[in-house]
Length: 369
Image (cartoon, rainbow, N blue to C red):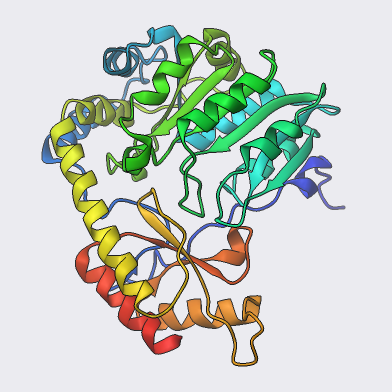
């Protein structure tokens, strides 16, 4: 007799993990939006020292990293949620806020974890299409909020389409959402979004909307994806208390905590990496547009492009065409993410890598399209 699992297991989609980790060193890893720049030497040293104390459990209060984030953003430590990556906080938010009969509203396509929240909780997911420029339609999202809504998710800049909406539009959305509805502004890539201005700009919104949570990560701009550190800046500490209550203790290991605290001390290096990444992105975009392909207006460390039209005038956005291109790129040592796995067939999401990696991608794509 087979093991009998809960019904929700059949509802939860599989996260579209990237391939290629066993292909060796000569691969341009442009599939997972990681930074091409490794941790700073001082960050590595802080992590090494933390390993020496691995016989002890990590600080369950996460006091050092909470204080460091509090000093940076001017938010009380009690209003800072921490997690094993930002998706850990997202999943905990779904468990804490959602249940059968409740609703969660978000744009689609967006971050691949979002559908898990409704599927795991039994809540209803309301997916709102992006506009023609692959941006969030915040008016349409606001129109979908009902008495059953518990959670609204806004990915800004949006993953996978790389686009952003201005903070004035976010404010307009917050004005229309009832105060008992939690709004999570998922800002994993906000440091790369020049049109959004200073990464501190959205923090000011927390002073006016206690139902707002800003979700951020050390995985991208700090180059610590392998250590999994995410955090939420909360308008109300009750959100942090709730997500902590539904998770296991020690959800952020000691090495990750030490590395993140040290990384926060080196903002000049972070800003330099942002500048280099954006310069590389602009060059990558120029190369892609040179092939005659459509690109979304990127505000992230990745780009989103559509595959070309077929000769008969019909758009060749089938899964088969997309699969052929991604397979051809992989055969040339370049890994990207296929749009079908991210909610939109006929597109590619490409992480901004080094100059050499980006040039390798453009050359390989030119052979295929």
